Length: 86
Image (cartoon, rainbow, N blue to C red; front, side, top):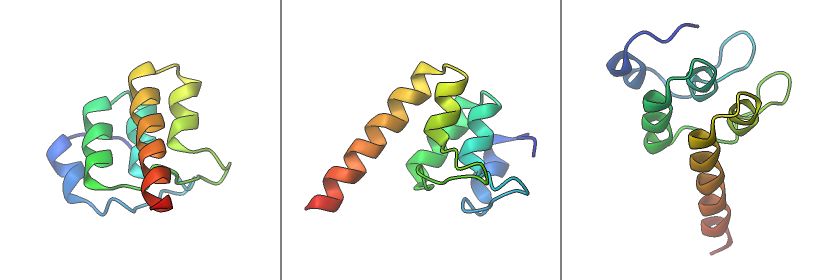
């Protein structure tokens, strides 16, 4: 899947998965579309979603060494874990 327009992507079902099991966040990360990825995170996309190879969005960010997304996803996951313990 190729990401074309930021507005269009945010109007889609954010829980969509492609043939590889990747969600829109994973596709945004591998496409280096950080603005879209951040919007998806803010909209509530599953940041722990695993594709068919069991890779998460954080795994993809680490693979391409995208420090901005690594920090965003790591912090989001920490916040989620903290909130679930309350």
